[in-house]
Image 1: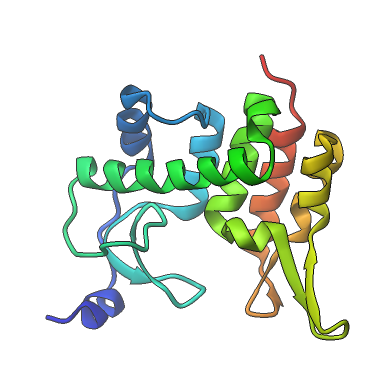
Image 2 (image 1 turned 90 degrees about the horizontal axis):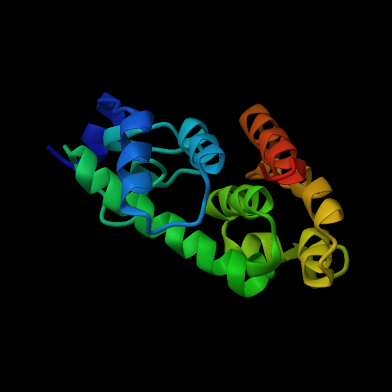
Length: 182
């Protein structure tokens, strides 16, 4: 059976909590429990490939690399940890993540995981015929974490349409981002 047929047939779900437990136990990511829960619950967890709202073949928890059917919890956790690490590297490199609180860092990791590193840094304006720096990137570079957090809801469109799921996710990211670390 082809991946396309599997993706259309539906997928077997897996436990986000179980995958989080595996990732937390490894100790290889900085993203905190609240951030992992935010990402995991927003993405959901599926053992078998499916096509996400952006039209990309996906498995596990938002994984788009080496997608195949029937992954174990350990394989899903390994993929997710790798993908989170890529997002964390972007936050550290492009958004001064090492200077952020753990909650702000975790919220930004969630946003990068979903939008992509480039997508949070720049946007194309057809009217102005060029690429421009996003407000969230400008505020991160300036170390203005409150304004950076306040601009998370700027990223609620996919395919030119405002998606309720992205609105809810960005609201949760903003709340986590603004929450003082305990």
